[in-house]
Image (tube, rainbow, N blue to C red; front, side, top):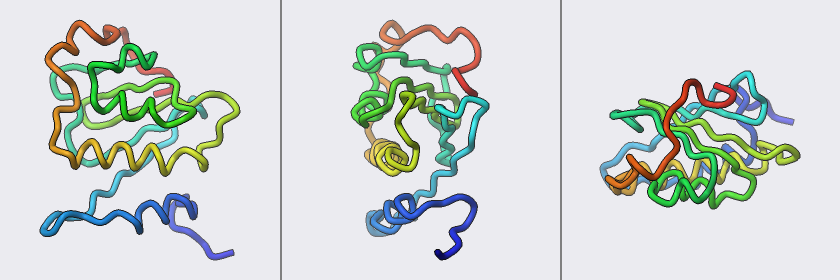
Length: 138
């Protein structure tokens, strides 16, 4: 079995290799970090995510006002999304394996960030759970 750099697995490398940037745009590379909670991964896209305030979406209903969170909840197995200034933490359900959903999570994040759409709507101030400290597992 060939060695893969820094914990990258074959599905993640396939997702990266399928990414086709728009002409003149560099390829986005999203780093991931483990957290103390094995069901939560931290995704670092190398750009701003939520500058005004951290945002915590504990349910798909809370995510309705957020393009980013809504798209992440469409990935089967995602149960919570937290957006910080320069990162996104995603929590998966127990029994779901990261190798099975990580490529879809990375794809959703890339699509949202590269779309140019607002990640959070103006109504988001009233539509998401108030930030009450650290995100689960961060």
